[in-house]
Amino acid sequence: MVHYHTSSEIKQLRRRISVYQTLSEVSQSIMDVQDLLQFFNMILDRTLESIFKANIGAILLKDQEDVVRMVAWKGYSDEEANTFSFNLTDSFSWVETGGDINGPLIVNDLSKYTDISLLESKNHKTVFSTISTPIFLEGELYGFINIDSTEKERIL
Image (tube, rainbow, N blue to C red; front, top):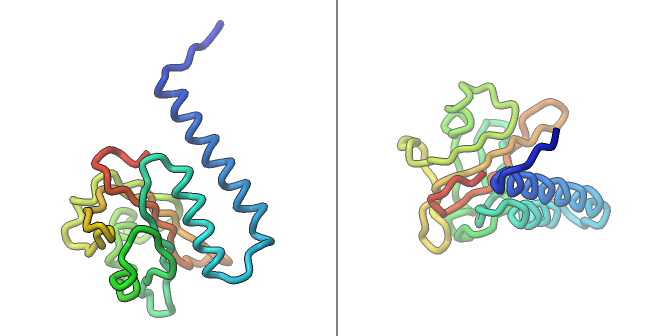
């Protein structure tokens, strides 16, 4: 029996292949990284390239007191990103999972999080959706990679 894929299935497969290719490129280029900020920016660049609707993003790290801050970003104002912080329990990842953060979270409508502060893009556009992926080191939550979109369509 022959199975024919729909055009949306083919698009989804192409996106997945693109993401896998990006992950492979990142893995191979880790050896060339000179410092942590350079590494974070490389991850952001490659990830933003691989996700079609994504146009801004950030890497956020959690400190000992569970305060989360941006350490690398694309598409956000430097001034605002440098001062942006929030408590982990005030994040949509925490709210959505009840504190059981264990994998990527796709939020296609950030407007439902009215009690959570969000940054606009540096072009003053509202962020409508995000993919938030936790970063774990030695089993502990270290931070997040957030890939965001200012388009009203679903990010994935």
